[in-house]
Length: 170
Image 1: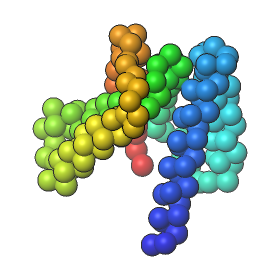
Image 2: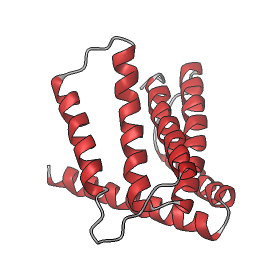
Image 3: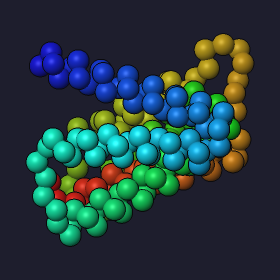
Image 4: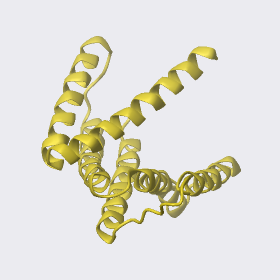
């Protein structure tokens, strides 16, 4: 159990650091240059991982993975573009909330029965996003209409990537 907690915390740290560094890079470079560099690095990491793990090729896996990858790529470009122009402290939790809500909404829309714990998790996510977005000081940052639109596109695309990935076989 301790190892799982350590790995979970490490994953959170790496995700947070990668989001921050990706957005920082998108401010320094262009969004497309930063996204391209990030995806090249990720492709190399996945290629190395595939060399050391068992896997099988199937049409369902290719289709599900390709659709998920396309949504993820579009979502990450919109994500970095949003964070490059707007306040990261507001946009990152908003994108995360939208991304998390999309699979729940899709599951409910197609008639899947969701356990009460799922609805509790959704309520906690909404509460956490609201609390993390409250400014600590007297300076109030605002999301621009363009930043809000990019956040919406990023959240929906990243959420749909999870939905698409769920169609691929285990």
